[in-house]
Amino acid sequence: MRTLVVCVDRTGDVTRKTGLRTPISGWEAVRSVVIDMGLADPEDSSVNTLLEALRLTRELRDGDEEATVAVVSGASESVVGADRAVAAQLDDLVAEYDPDSAVVVTDSAEDERMVPIVESRLRVDSVDRVVVRQARDIESTYYLLKQFLGDEELRQTVLVPIGIVLLVFPAILMLASPAVAVASIAAVVGLFLLYKGLGIDDYVADIPSQARDALYSGRVSIVTYVVAAGLSLVGVFAGALGISDLPSGSPALVVVTAFAFDSVPWLALAALAASTGRLVDEAIRNDRLRTSYLNLPFGVVAVGLVVRGFSAYFLERAGQLTPFAVPPLHLGALSVAGFSLSPEARLAVFVLLGVLISLVGIRVSTYLSGADLEGPEPVE
Image 1 (cartoon, rainbow, N blue to C red):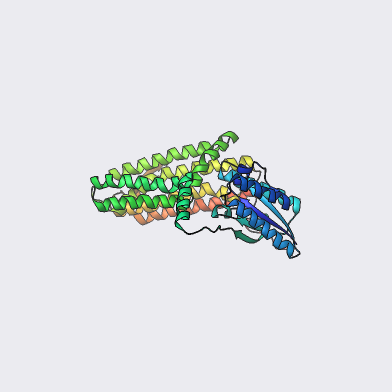
Image 2 (image 1 turned 90 degrees about the vertical axis):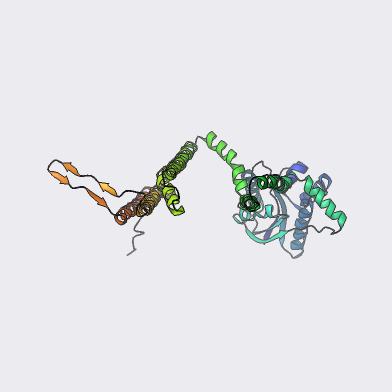
């Protein structure tokens, strides 16, 4: 059984501090990297991670198992680039050694995010996270605090928000009551924690590179996304105008429903523009379109109709919207008397239209993608 003991360095410390090109494989090569890393930065936990990888390799070899130690590093300015670099290096190692399984050695939660990438190429038998033991005295605490203050990323993540809170809180106290000040600060801190906890900062950091790649590759979606953003702003503006026409003291449910009634058509158009651009990009890049991309425009229109119908129903029930009236029609000898729809009939029409468009989308996407709606024919 051949096992690959791989030390993962997502942040690119090995490449940056030693100047070596990864992947690095083999016992002697990795031992040399340990010395280079230790001389470059003795305090870096990557040194302990490399030593742990060597220890595991020796342990596996002592058990009469064929083991190879290797180091992969994500030397890139962006998160996506680092992950792709690690994936390419793993492909090279798999092609060279053809291992049956892998043991991943990391030193942080950041590096452990690479485990799914390793699992997509090899069976991962174990994940070993190295934790460096530190002395728990006052001197070590001072040293760790000094190290913390010297880390630019930690300073920006922790100290900057605390400083902003300490500056803004007295200003809010001078303008409002203590309850309002505490609630405002708590809301801002909660939004910041969600921003960091959900990884929105990583997504926002990748937006410039993604937009640059889209512009250089000539994607249609970059234009349709801008159009969608403009239509979304129009929808929000239309919803705000609809709210301004309501009588003062209207219930909150009526206000929300009126905003949805006026903004949903524009928001649906925005989503339709964005999904159409994505569909065109897929049609240009691939010969065969996926069903999900073909279904998306129809689904957007269907959802918009259903939301519009329900909001109209609630507004008409609240007396803020006139009934839907069909004027008399005269087509030669044929004439149709005018009539009005009840709120329930109006809602039913919108819901039925939404369901009908959704079914049409399923049928069209199934036909264009080459799938068989009835399934395979039975074999006699």
